[in-house]
Length: 295
Image (cartoon, rainbow, N blue to C red; front, top):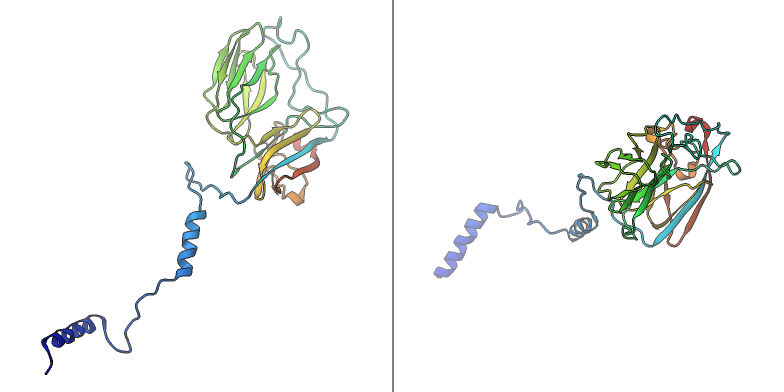
């Protein structure tokens, strides 16, 4: 005789088979793929968060730090710089010496090309904090003493006027546009990054012109009078894309084109390189064609 408990069990089996199907056509229950789950978890850990503009920051893959240096040289014979038309405050402006166009500064003996800007377009790591000491940006004899200068976002800049006449300092692409009285100065802290150098002008003396670039990471250099440059503490062990710019460049956005195929240098003035930890990489002499600077 079948017990009531057995009958209840038999009834349950009938219900289950009716709902799910019993026999050879039954579909096996899903089995977790441990390997696939591990890949998904790894991807979530490695993936970097999205930036404020919606782009995804590259994950830091390298270790250590390195230095990049080199020298820019002008491949040609530059013309004599043209004098500027100074027609205001002549008792101060250009009194001690005539003012000339400084958009193309080439060392006569070495052909070194000054004022070339080179910077990392995007960095995954930054070694050094923003400097607390102010960077001096002065104007004297109605001329910006630094034709091209760089600062980090958040770094204080002492915008100074060493002349006995007032100047209006206007940084293109920013809200900074202030009158700097004679012999005085003001402190300015840039709050946003620039993708390329911007012009600095004086509305009172229209011949005055310089260029500035603000970068968050500080991985930027401006070539000296002999054309030399150096950027230290760069992230090593991962590809870095550099941008090279000059005010006179005829390339797109001021990019400087150079024939260096091993660096994948393109017409926009960009090249790629991976530095090793503790490496001091010297690119040697980088010759900039005269035609590329409109000379």
